[in-house]
Length: 113
Image (cartoon, rainbow, N blue to C red; front, side, top):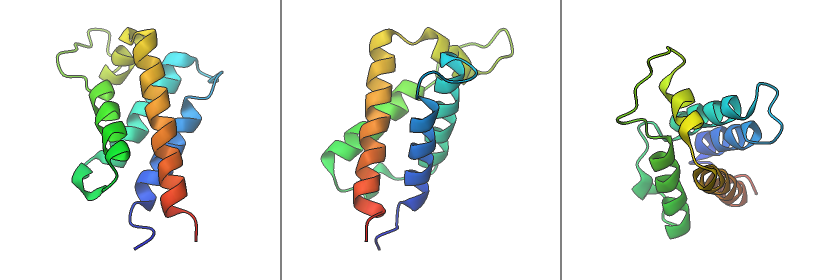
């Protein structure tokens, strides 16, 4: 079925849009919004349903980079915001690149007739 992953495609495109600079609410909020969309895309999702090795690797990178295990939110702003604030430049680049590549992959494979 061509549109099997249409929901994932929509959410990854929303995440990619959040990462486009400048974000009206700032870079941290852009990453926080992108984390949420990626979470929605892959919540209860079996990565093994994707048969492409590169796409599976991008999914794993994204899930790793949005992971908040071990973080504490003492200010009440939310763990994804804490994670976004703590990301290194390399992590931001890796996350953005993975979201962009995976969104493009889904576009090529699931939106075209």
